[in-house]
Length: 157
Length: 315
Image 1: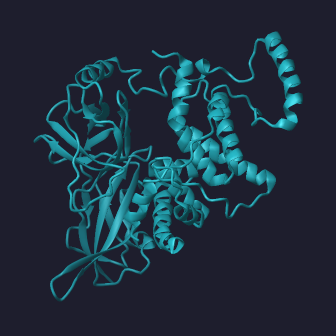
Image 2 (image 1 turned 90 degrees about the vertical axis):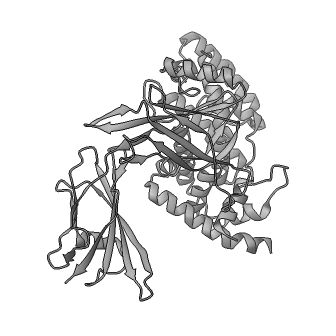
Image 3 (image 1 turned 45 degrees about the horizontal axis):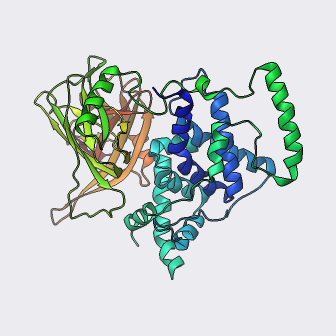
């Protein structure tokens, strides 16, 4: 059995990139995204002891979202158009058209697309994170993808 | 550009890596520990000294250590509380040292209890590498497994990131006429890794009680559809379609909507309630088809109706 400290490291290694990408898509700011992920881990360590969490990953995604939304409310910041989430090909070549198109989606749809494609959550998990039903999460994702199908060619023109 | 092409393009892209320091911050997190800020560096150093003294004095860290938080192995392995499964997986890894393993437990709902299906059931998980564009001309394929004596399917898979595109089941005679539900998903298979996927459920179908197939249902009387009691089903979803028979003999089905309800005590839903999910009102003379799905108390799909029920609406 690995030492327990490695369990947390394993969890971090598995989830960090997806969680950070999600936070970045919500904030548009690498520093705030980093802080939100860190604070989500703090909450996990404070909340988890003695509790039977259904999914540690699910907890982290939900906590990250709540932290970012709380911060927005505190600062009374309306963030209709955050900086686009930077997306790049395997080779490292940035895909600016895709980033821009994703940034043009309504926030709920963008969030559903990011959670599905880059956080690799199921619609049921997305529903839990966003506080909606599975059907609503799937609907937002579908609408987002349909809208991207229109936006992407325009951004590349 | 098609939605499929958009999905495929997005999936081929990567989001940025988090900064390396974030790992250290998250593995030894303290509330309020923010990114290093030059302006606060000196003050912070004094604070650290003060905090250290306080921590030593109280021997009570502000945040619990990881070994006090995570259940042993919980984040890493689905095998922690199942030594039998662990043995089987270890054996498979000895035979397939570079592979990953997907685990699905198959359970049968019988007399109000879930029993493991221990023989006569096989399944193939259909997977496609995520970095390959879906090709509708090509049939998806994937690993096959037969249930073992513990009701477990163990799939040996090469490492990779796969899109789940479906499954193919191979039920023995005992299970052919039962409903089968399994939620497939995308999987990231790592060498030496084990993924416990959702349980597959074999269960009796939901049976229609009314209306009779092909009968007429009166709008005025406002009767609707009903089904035989199914105690494990806590929520139902009724799919409604309009069925049109064209002059050319082509039957077209237009989905009108899905009504989602906590399972009513009387196991029936009136026509007027079904109509609430349709954009257009039901008209006398038109034919409708309804399907039924049943979910448990946790919102997990359990079963459904084997066939759609057709009826005609009358005044």
